[in-house]
Image (cartoon, rainbow, N blue to C red; front, side, top):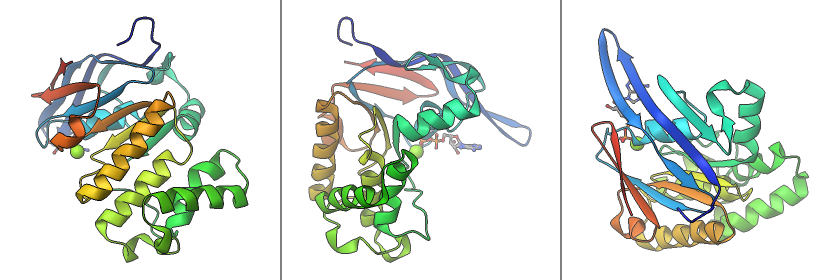
Amino acid sequence: MEHGAKIVIDTRQLVKIYQNGSEELKVLDDVNIKVSNSDFIAILGPSGSGKSTLMNILGCLDIPTSGQYYLDGLDVLKASDNELAEIRNKKIGFIFQKFNLLPKLTAVQNVMLPLLYRGVKEEEAWETAREKLSILGLEARLHHRPNELSGGQQQRVAIARAIVGTPQLLLADEPTGNLDSKSSGDAMEIFKELNRQGNTIVIITHDIEVAEQVRKIFYIRDGKIHENG
Ligand code: ADP
Ligand code: MG
């Protein structure tokens, strides 16, 4: 963390317990992390270690069982639904591990959505979405629906949708997991450019090449998180 940098993500004693019937599964156990503005960090950890769970909490899509979470100074667990929707729509770009594209919309329509939510006019949104898809090598796939695209192509649409509005905070859950090394490199260049513009990036990855390019790494194991500079 740079001296005097603004803290964007601040979690305190986050605990997440899933209840499966009578079984309790403690997935996050006293997770404290701070991420400052324009940081680029990676979260690593074995499969099932709680990475997606943490990411969903950071993205205000899920709530912890206990603990606190301050996002850009806002006490997320005390925020209203409207405030949370506003944050999700205007501040955060989220790349889901399973893409979560809308099946009835074409690639370009999926990517336009965040811009339309922000009140950008349809024509301008279309042009910006087309441009992002074309940078990701999908110029010829604009009008395809998700089920007409390969896993790697869907992932690139999901990346385009997450970055199209230049989000202040990008949360990316294994965003290169389905990509070949060229597409993966292209995606990393897009993330780095977003970061150079002063935006904060948190990326979950298994890819050592990706992890080597970030500024700071957190490891999750047995519910605990460890920082490695
Ligand atoms: P990772 O992303 O690191 O693979 P997850 O956060 O997806 O890990 O899952 C962590 C653990 O919590 C796993 O054992 C998973 O089966 C369990 N889990 C995840 N989501 C739920 C849920 N909604 N209900 C119950 N258990 C869950
Ligand atoms: Mg996961």
